Amino acid sequence: MFLHPGNISGKKYNRIISLVPSITELLYYLKLENEVVGITKFCVHPEEWFRNKTRIGGTKNINFKTIETLSPDLIIANKEENVKDQVERLAEKYDVYLSNVNNLFDAINMINDIGNLTGKIVDASSLAKEITEKFEKLKETASSKRKIRTAYFIWKDPFMVAGSGTFINNMMEYCGFENIFSSQKRYPEIILKQVEENNCELILLSSEPYPFKEKHLKEFQKIFPRLKIMLTDGEMFSWYGSRLLNAANYFENILQSE
Picture (spheres, one colour):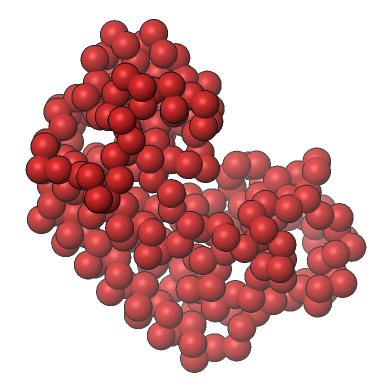
C-alpha cells in the first residue's frame, strides 16, 4: 500500500528499508539505527551504515529476494530516483512511502512525514524548523545581490543540465542564481553553444551524478575563457534530507565568494 500524508496513521514502523540515499542520511540523523534494516548501494552516508547495513541493490535495480528476507514493515522510495514498476510491485506487499521532492517546501513536508512514520515527530519537526530558518536567511542574503545567469551541468556525453521542476533548480533560486535553462523541464540535453547563446555568466559542474573533476573544469575553461566555472558539491544541491542543514551554509559560502 502507498502511504500519503492523508493516510499516515500513528503506527510506528520498526523494520525500514530506504531506497533513497538522502533519506537514508535523514534516518541516521533521526537516530533510527535499529529500525533501518536495508539500504541501497548508493546510500553512502553515513559510512558506518554503508559498511554494515544490508544492501538491497541499486536505486533502480532492486533485489526483491533480499528485501523479502529482511521482512520490512515500511519501504521508503522516491518518485524520481526509483523505478515506477519496481516501487508498485513493492507496494503490493509492503507499506511504501513514496516521496516526491521538487523544492524546499516538499523537502520540509517529507521530513515531517518521516518523523510521523518513525515516531520521531519532535526531532523531525525541530530539524525542519532549523532548515527553514537557515534557508530564509540564505534567501535574504541572496536577495541583496545581483542574480547571476548560471548553467548547472549534471552529465557529460551527452551534456545535460538541470532545468525547471527540479530540486536543483530550486536550490539555485535560493542561491540567487538565474538558471539559464529554466525554460526547459527536468534534465534536458544541450549543446555547448547554447551556453553562450543564453548569456551565461557562471557554469557549475556537479560532482554527481556525473563526477566532474578538475580536468573537466580546465576543458570547460578553454571553451569558455571568459566565464566563471566552478566545481560544486552535487550532494548539497540535490540531497533533500538532513544534508540541507549543511547545504545552507555551503550556499552562503558560495554567495560570499561572488
